[in-house]
Image 1 (cartoon, rainbow, N blue to C red):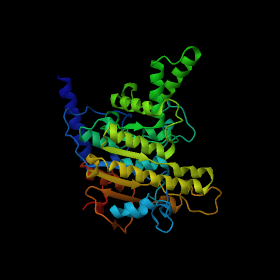
Image 2: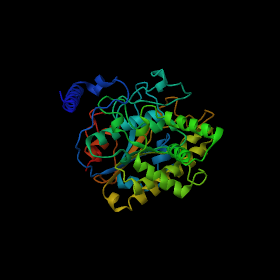
Image 3: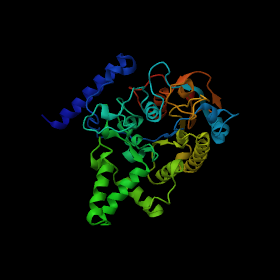
Image 4: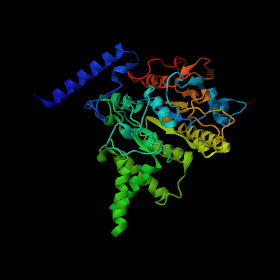
Length: 412
């Protein structure tokens, strides 16, 4: 029997059966425990070209309360509050589920946004004996597909045009670019831009250039293998590819090898994203801003200053992306926190988010851009996981394993 025909028939059967079964099960719980991670069926030979809208998801994080974000009387983000809200639809009463034991933190919130499903995540070392345990590890595997997978499964979009842009202090979140769902997985992954990815690329180039010798050579080879092993679910040859090789070559030409010249923190994320728009022309980007999380060091001004920096960076990002003719009238922006923050004034470290207080579950969402009504505020309670299906509809994607209710007011 022809092996290609057999695999395609199997793929068709699996997809048809899965979607039919999902339609009959509330919340699609039948697929909550899929087979081994990273398994994906064969990609179809021909998929249509994706023509837009391009989507930028701004993770307004890590962890931001409504008060300092969108309250006109107390905001530390004037561009967001006074300018961007006029351009779209604001959902000020968005929440993370408060009635079940779901964690309000950065990694979990990022995956709630990407998958449209609440899950109780554990570090992979709890379920994979071959993966060493990690203190406070947030190496999570989603059981349902991410937006990146939905996009690349439906349209002819290369991995370097579906991007997760991540900060240097939350390395586990670099690997949230594909699920372990057996109909999707690693074949439909996105790529990640981060300082750690650059360091990995740079070290490999330096080894090829013969920069090291003797004991230092062995030390750097071991270091490279440690970098590569972090992405334990993907084969080494799938990691970055030719497009990102050119991207990092240009980055190195401009900023050099030291790491002391390029921006850091949230400013780094903006620079990575703007260069990606110029060089990679992405269709879907998630930018994981996070500087407000420095409040864990114990000083409230780390939080408020981080918010102001993030506001400035979003202003720069929106302004420069919209100056590009191909993006200006064909882009949707989604601003949404990963989680809120506690408002207990009596704890020694302010504005935490791990104690399950009401305000840590209270967030917001703002959508603006192509096809989005302007200047609207929606006065009803909505859920964080509704954002995924909403983005999917805006992009023309089917998101069968995400929350089925969407934010209807985002459509003109």
